[in-house]
Image 1 (tube, rainbow, N blue to C red):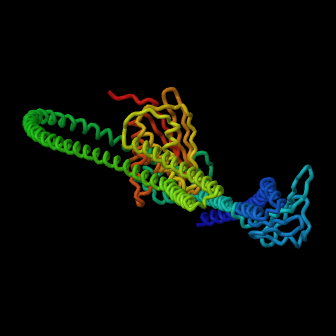
Image 2 (cartoon, one colour):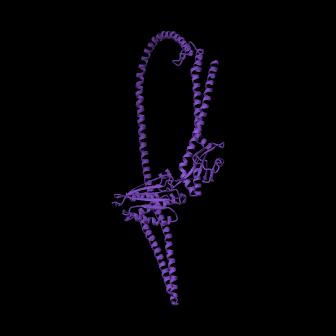
Image 3 (cartoon, rainbow, N blue to C red):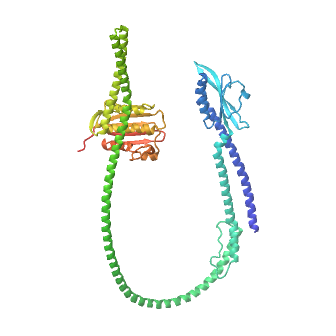
Length: 582
C-alpha cells in the first residue's frame, strides 16, 4: 500500500506540471492564431482597394449613385467585409451599409489622403479606409474615400476550426501521456512487485513448474535481484526432484517394454481378423452405393428432361414478348414523330395567320378605296390630287400585300418540306446550311416570344445525301429540348450549332447554356421513356429517337456531356453520303 501511494503521488505531480504547461502553450497558440488571422483580413481589405476602387471611383466621378450603391452591395457580400461607408469629395456619406463605426467623429468631413487602418473598437469592429483617386488627362483628382469594416466575430469564425484542433490536440496528447505514465508505473513497479509477492505466497514444493518470476531483461533493480534469488532457489529444488524422477522412470521403462511386447502380439492377431471382416463389409457397402448412384442418375436424367422442356417454353414466350415490345416501341416512336409534326403544324398555322390577316386587311382597304374612287368618278368629283392620293395608298397596300403573301409563302414552303421529310425516310440531296435554316424557320413560332438566340456556323457548300427527315427530326428534338428543358429557368438562352466538313463525313457540335443535367440524369439521357417532365406530359422518347436516328439511320456516332449549370453539349459524326444496305 505504501508503494502504491508513492507512485500515485509522483504521477500526480508530473501530470500537474504538464497540464499547466499545456494550457499556457495552447492559450498562446490561440492568441497568436487570432492576431495572424486579423492581420490577414486587414491585408484582404487592402487588396480590395486595387480590385474595386477603379469601378467605384468612375461611378462617383460620373455621379452614378445607383452604380455606386450596387458596387457597395457587392463589397458587402464578401465574407470578410461586415460594413462599408462611401463618401464623396465633400465628405458627404453616399452610403453606409452593415456594421460600422462613426468615422465622422474621427475625420469630420475631411477625406483621407492615403490608406489607413482603423484599430479594433470595444464592439470588435476594425477596418481600413483608402482614398478614391480618378485620373483624367494625366491629372489625379480625389473624388471621395471608402472605409471597409470587419469584426472580431469574422476573425473568430475563421479560426474556429483551428481552435478546436489545438484544444483537441492538447487533449489527445494529455490523454496519451496519462495512459503512458499509467502503463509505465504499472509495468515497471506495481505488477512486478505484486507478482513476486503472490508467487512467494503461492509457492508449493509439489508444484514448482511456473513458479519462477519473469523480470524484464536489462533492468538491474532491487525487484530483479529478489526475483533472481528466488529463481535460483527454485532451480535447486527442481534439480533434486529431477534426479528422483529419473530413477523412477528407468524402472517404469523396463516394465513398459514387457507390456509392449504382449500388446504387439495381441494387436497382430486382432488386425488380421478385422482385416478380413472389413473387406467383406467394404464390398457390401460399395454395392449399395452403386445402386443408389444408378437410381440418382435416372432421376437426374428425368428431371433435366422436364427442365429442358420448361426452358424451351419460356424461351418461346420471351421471344413473343420481345417482339411485342419492339412493335410497341415502334408505335411509340411513330406517335412521337406525329406529335412533333402536330406541334409544328400548330406553330406554323399561328405564324401564317399574321401575314394572311394583314393581306386580308390590305385587300379590304384597297377595295374600299377603289369603290370610293369609282363613286367619285361617276359623280364627276374626281380630282387629280385625289387620284394621286389613291395611287400612293394603292401602291402601299399592294407592297404590304405582296410582302405578307411572300412571308406566308416562305413559311408554308418551309413547313411543307420539313413536314414531308419528317413523315418520310426517303434519301434526298440537301444543302445542310440551307436545310438548318429551314428547320429553324419552321420552329420560329416556338422561339419568337422568347429572347433565346440560335447561332449556326455551317459552311454553305456541305451537301448531304441522306434521309432528310432524320436531320429534321434530330435538330427539332434538340432545339425543343433546349427550349423546354434547358431554358426552363432562363429568359435569355444561347444555342450554338457548329458544323465542320471532314473528308466524306460531317462533324456537328450542338450546345446550349441551359441548366444542364446531373451525372445520374446524364447516364439515362438516351434511355427510352426517361424524362424530367413526366408530370407535364413528357414522353421521354425525344433523345432516344435522336440517338437511334444518328446511330442507325445515319450510320454515325453521338456523344453528350453536361454539368449542372453549364448546359448540354452534343457531338455528332456521320457520313455525308449514306450507303444503301444491300
